[in-house]
Amino acid sequence: MNFKDLNLDEHIINSLQALGYETPSPIQQKAIPYLLEGRDVFGCAQTGTGKTAAFALPILQLLSKSTVHRKGIKALILAPTRELAIQIGESFTDYGKGLRIKHAVVFGGVSQLSQTQAIQRGVDVLIATPGRLLDLMTQGFIRLDTIEFFVLDEADRMLDMGFIHDIKRIIPKLPKKRQTMFLSATVPEEIRSLANSLLTDPVRVEVTPVSSPVEMIKQRVLYVEKSEKREALHSLIMEESIEHALIFTRTKHGADKVAKDLSRHGIKAEAIHGNKSQNARQRALAGFKDRSVKILVATDIASRGIDVDKLTHVINFELPEVAETYIHRIGRTGRAGESGIAISLCSSEELPYLRDINKLVKNVIDEMNAAPAYPSKAQAPAAAKSGNKRNFGKPVRRYASR
Ligand code: AMP
Image 1 (cartoon, protein in one colour):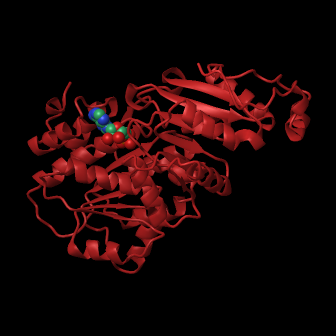
Image 2 (image 1 turned 120 degrees about the vertical axis):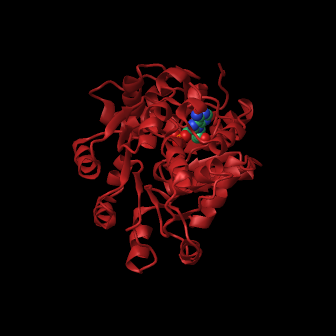
Image 3 (image 1 turned 180 degrees about the vertical axis):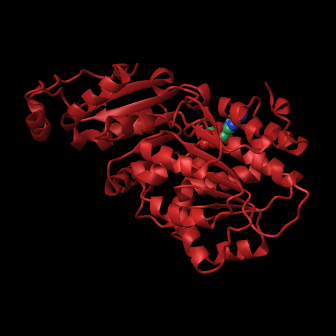
């Protein structure tokens, strides 16, 4: 199947060609025909599956073909994070070249002036995070009574991040007669009932991620003590000739320290986390995308919504305490069927976390150096606390890379 088979407009096909998209991804193949028919869609898909184009292309096409020329915002897309909102905005720019569809992105943490000015000039598509949207609605800058298309993106994350009350205040302001697309990577009960309240006779489309992390990503662990980690990280980047990597740390402070340390070694690195101004975060992300910044160091929260094409490496400077977070982190590489590499630095304190992760990924993590003895189950908590130094292999500076 190609994009022409989906009955997409020539302008859109040309934009997709310019972007190098050859075939529609599974979610695009499944959702686009229904959305073009005007049906509501419940999409179960995560980042990396091409979900943005799955809703953006039909919205662009339907808006550009519409013969009714009414003023006001016609499509509203709600996203949980500013980064994701900005990325969706960029996708609309990319896909909508040659069409006269105007869009604006609004999110908190920055001055609202340029956002309200854009809205006052008139937009067809508004991409927003819930808090800022409500704020601008309350101030009278935004009305939603002309909305024809509504997209709730990453609904499960919205819930996790505590946006449910905001969303419940926004929804009654939308016209009842509208087309809705609801997207969520997971479908717990609360999401199911929220979807039921929003969708009318929806089609459910479900896709598994393009690449399953466990199968597609080469996973390795380097055992190294906490105090040796920064040194080991630097050696790792040099010895493996790593050109572009997303590094995860557990804390904001840790992210700053790692980025500063790498910069001191002459490696262009930036940290991105909640204490940074929105401008600083955007600058760091833009630099990472255009590759003027080689290494981006992020906390889990800040990394949400970061989507970088062809990211080759993910490095866990610290292991996450929750094993599922490991899967989320390493899923940033190896996108779209390409293989990526995930390397985790594991200290003796972190051995219990590694054990949980290994259970989840079924022991596919290669060891780059001698493994220390695992603390036995009975010992585990105490060993984790004390660092279990006695059992732990020598701190590593040099390791045999596979
Ligand atoms: P998303 O899941 O929307 O975040 O998209 C993930 C990545 O896949 C983005 O970088 C898109 O630009 C890219 N992408 C989306 N659809 C396609 C396609 N049909 N062919 C190639 N790349 C795509």
